[in-house]
Image (cartoon, rainbow over all chains, first blue to last red; front, side, top):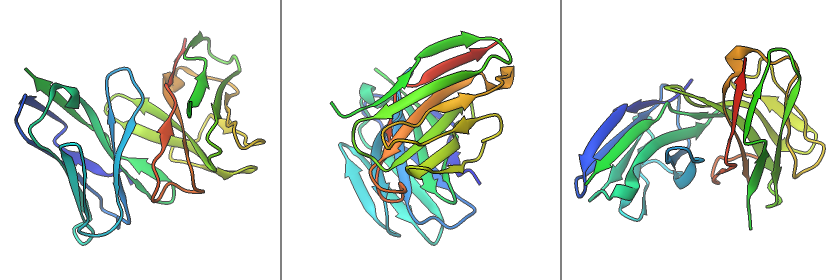
Length: 107
Length: 115
């Protein structure tokens, strides 16, 4: 079962904040976040392994709520370089990714 | 340089003509995987391998074959390609036998068009 991501797309101005959510109908044991720029391969951002865990990467951080079976990615003071599609993924019987959230940061 | 290398990067072919997309990694990773990416559907796993000679189906294995005879190589075989296999394909690898707590490293992708 593929995780659900929201929103599908978001447009920001430089310096604004955004939140991307990832949820699953099945139990989540870990959540992985990747960013893919147009025409490029997905690039690893972070893994959250424990319920309630928060991690950070540049001004991007994430939380993981095991009980609610969801994770959120927080982009603070967004930069032009943050533009791309963000995917959450989780190991299940096989590895499954969400459909992605397209983020556009405008000057 | 540590990398996952896919070939070819682009391929246009015709229905029914067997093709192989190669994938090689130089990081001594145990886990390798193939994904296809289609608009609005994200990355969907085709097959994965946890070790040499060990492969298993992902979510969309129909029409594909794989083999893992050596640790570094994980080719994707389309024995009788059809137009619905037109897609962007990514190979990935991860250090452990399963990427539950370790990242996956992706190749640059292969854009496949089947006419």
